[in-house]
Image (cartoon, rainbow, N blue to C red; front, side, top):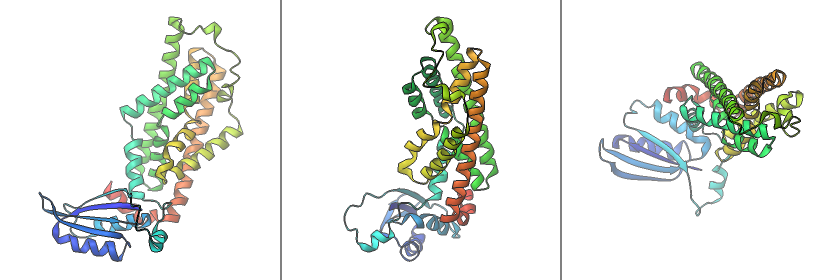
Length: 311
């Protein structure tokens, strides 16, 4: 059950407190007067069920006077005083859509950090391919933040926020394009400096050959990864692990395109490109459908307008 922290002008304190107690079924509602100096404001804190957080934000923002009102949310660390009523109100699987939208946009926008991380991940993946080492490829997948780019696109579609969806698609293209170029440049440097001898590079690639040989099972894996990724977005504790799972379908293929281009292995490059494109489409479709279903079951459509206005 999240802890809500609201700072508001003194004349709004009573109204917001009543909303917390009567509408959102909050627990442990406390008020501290005169906490904010300029402009003057009171602090209200309360434990609020997750399914009520979006409703609370909507009620606060739809009021006539929302000037100088700030709302933040953090995990509650309450250990004692949990009775039967509290347990019934605890809904850890409910979605706080306002928080999901904010977190995904912060982590999934086109930025130098995301760009560099995907380039570095692709470079590590390229070395893993050259050495036929799955461990390096797994490390590259763990490093990449690519699913947040995909999630930004899918969430934009679910919210019918077309500008964000377009921005997400641009971010995907730019970051993976840069990743492919980075893998190619690193491979060229390794070849030309003699760090890696092209003649002694394993030709069989028994452990990584599947990356450039797309088939029906790779699409199935990408679809499953998309579903898992979308569900993980709505469960904060699962996001990191799901991100690694999703990267299984993207980073190795992007790295393989760069490595194959440097080695002028056109058939392998074509296979890796088809693999990457098919996996990205599968991720986008599966994630979008899952988010739409999750949204319909948890009321995202009711908050769509207010979330867009807030963000």
